Image (cartoon, rainbow, N blue to C red; front, side, top):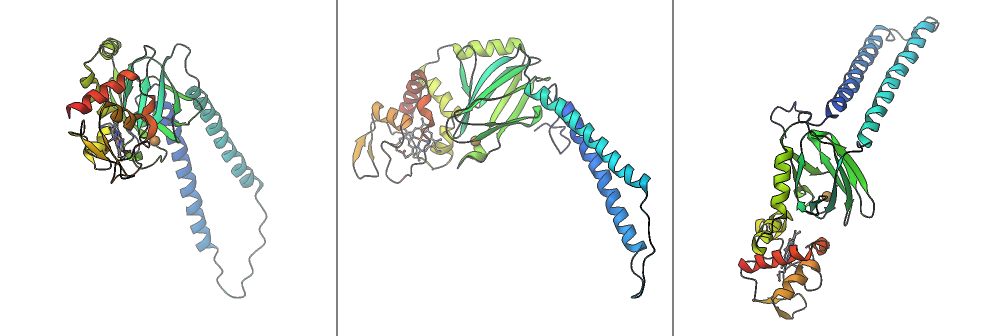
Length: 306
Ligand SMILES: [Cu+2]
């Protein structure tokens, strides 16, 4: 999060984030003032008018029209302010400008995939140009996820078989954190991504660099990191260490053995439940089957180098 964050939220870094904050602080401060005033009055009256003897009978009190009118009218006005203001901000947040640059987002166990209009895809690294409205068209491959960029004040559920969207316009070059905020299984807390806000020139340069044909093994190495394969296969031992696996004999849970050739590696990635290695559970997500042939070739080429 931002270095100069106030402790509540990181610094506002999108065009409407400031307004979201102003509304938030308005509501917070007004509620705090009313809360303190009501509690103080309650304590004061509790002491001032406490029953002093067993036989005490309180005097008859007539209601004060002015007082009652005030406490109906003032809160109503405050609530209407919050409602109209909130509604305006809500509409702004929902309505992407027509010239927005569209990026498709796919949430899957446990990574974020971004696809640009050029066909380029990236995982867990979202590149966007600064000072340009960006619309994210989002859907999920498996369970519910939720896409949250605190610095931009955007947050939206990501749902299988349905499109949701958010938009933002970043106002400063930098990198910002993305979280998944809907508990989605074992590696939910590792379902992180980074937004790189860059100049239009850097964005174009990045796009061209992505398009360049990397040697398959290098592409595979990059994907292995981006698609969080490392989390299970290197950083933890949720999955088997893949070093030296190519060409070796693998024992499966049903007691049979197979030689880990290219076909086996491919099948293990796109359909992990087909042959499960002995000693491991069915923990590898089946969400990688949607990768392109080129990406899969790259991954296999990379695994062979390990
Ligand atoms: Cu998630």
